[in-house]
Image (cartoon, rainbow, N blue to C red; front, side):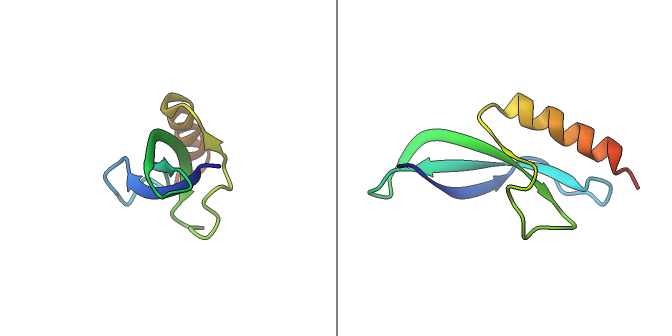
Length: 75
């Protein structure tokens, strides 16, 4: 069963962006990367719950949800 590892930030951090899409590399049982990625949305005000807003197979879908969340929670 693949395991998530290797979080990388996909956007430059700014003071205005609360939600960010991060990609996560999947690894196999031996610890080797599989070449597959999952995408998560991280809330900079609640970093403890990394999967709160879902895990996505497609970056475009994660970006869309992230944009909606940033619009809804604009400060």
